[in-house]
Structures are given as C-alpha cells and as structure tokens.
Length: 307
Image 1 (cartoon, rainbow, N blue to C red):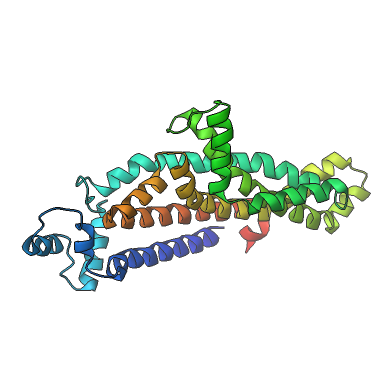
Image 2 (cartoon, rainbow, N blue to C red):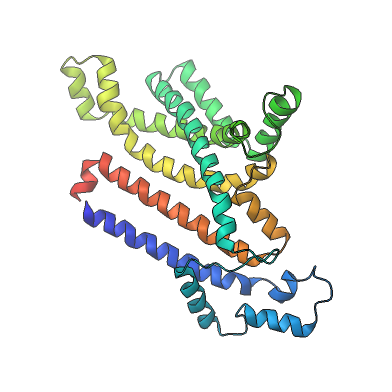
C-alpha cells in the first residue's frame, strides 16, 4: 500500500515540476514583448520605465535563472504581484479558490445524486425500454454545452420565475451553477455506472452469491455495487477535474466570484502573473484530487494494496 502511495506521490511531484516549467515558459511564448503587452493600456509609459519593469520582473535574465528565481519564490509562497493594483497573486487566488472548490464540490454532489441511481437502475433494467430511455437522456446530457445550459437555467429559474438570484456568490447563488456543472457530469457517471454494474453482474462471485440463495437486494448492494464502484471512483476524480475546468465558463455566466472568473479577467487585462498563478494553482488542485482518488481506489480494491 505504501509503495503504491509513494509511487503516486512521485508522479504528482513530477507533474507539478512540469507545470512550473510550463508556467515559466508561458510569458516567453506570447508573441511580441510581454511587458509592452501587459502595460499597453498604461498612459505615458516611457521606454526607460518599460526597461525598468522588465528588470523588476526578472525578464532580462537567462531563462534558467528566471526559472530558479520563480521556484525559489514559489517555495516561499510568492507568486508575484498583479499588474492591476499590485496585490500579491497568492492572496488574490486564495480569496477566490474556496468559491471554485465549493462550486465544483456541489456540482459533484449533484452529479453523484443523479448519475449513480440512474446508472444503477439502467443496469438493473438492462435491455428494457427504461434502460434505453435513460441512456438516451444521458447521451443528451453529455452533449449539452455548459454555456447553453447555464443561460437556459438562468433565463427560466432566475429571470422568468425569480426563484434564484441572477448573479452573486451566496448559497442561493450556488444552486444554478452547481446544477449546470452537475447535470452534464451526471450523464457521464450514469453511463459509467451502468457499464461497470453490468460487467460486475456477470462475475463469478456474483453468481456464487445468487446460488447461495442470498436476496437480490443483498447481492446488488454488498457485491455488485461495492465491486462496481472501483472504476466509478476513478471516473469521479476525472470528473472533478473537468468540473474545475468547466467552472471557468459557468462562473462567468453566473458572475460567481471564483478563480475561473478571475482567470478570464486576467486574460483580458493581460495580467500574466495572475494567469501564471492560476495555471499553477489549478494544476496543483487537479493533481491533489487525482492523488486522493488513487488512494481511495487502493482502499476500496484490495488487489491494489497487495500489488
């Protein structure tokens, strides 16, 4: 078990290392002079001031020196300062990151609450009209873009019916964004659950349990559901990462004050330190979630622990 966890930790650190390299190179991959682009909207900036800004940002140094400086500051929790307002980037991200994690977690709860029962029911009624109808609905759910579904829910439930606020970051504002993110991911979980349950139902240990005369409900709950959850847990980890990415669109639709909305604002303002901090933070969260899911996977499946 510990060898498995340590191996996953090594992969996590390698992924974060690659991310730091990519973040360092990001500002050099932008066409043109990045400093002039960042300060293009500033009035009266002289060439001497531009050169001074370049020196203050360390862009006059060789790329490997820039990388070592970036990592050294990163180890001390320093992601630089924003172009607009000169606030610490880490503070700006930490103010908004909890809102994005809350939105993604709520959306995951919606996806699980809808997707697991639908997938389990479709597997139990495999080959029937109900199974076909549920899977058609799941395919339709996967095909619906977040921005279209979000605007539709906003128009119906916030504008026409007035049941929820149009924008904001309160608990009442969480419902529509969470449903928008959760519905499409519920469709993915439903399809994965159905496939996993059907495969598990044909295993020998399930036939043995049925041959012993155990009630159908006991067989489904203790044997089929538990064994079938192993690949579903992995899928949930991937879906949470997709939800973090989908939050970029959904947060802007509902004016949810998270890091996704912050990233779009930074892109429009050419605030590259914020963009770099967002990419690094987003990647770290995804890596940590994947590591957590791998650990849970090993706890659920004894074969992983023995390996």
